[in-house]
Length: 65
Image 1 (tube, rainbow, N blue to C red):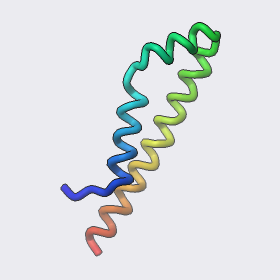
Image 2: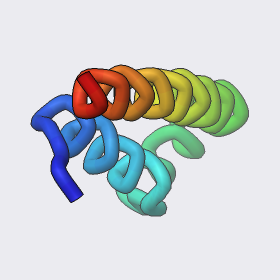
Image 3: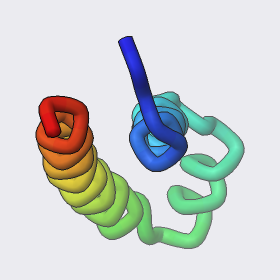
């Protein structure tokens, strides 16, 4: 499958956001902002997923010519 750098970057960022980064989550809990932190992570994942879908559609359309 052909790919492009933007699709690869979006997929890597989504993988990173979905992984449980315990040191950062611990800091959020310590500072009392765990719910806010998780809400932002969820929002970012949703935004990046939408961008990834759009980028894939654009890439496929360009491949078809």
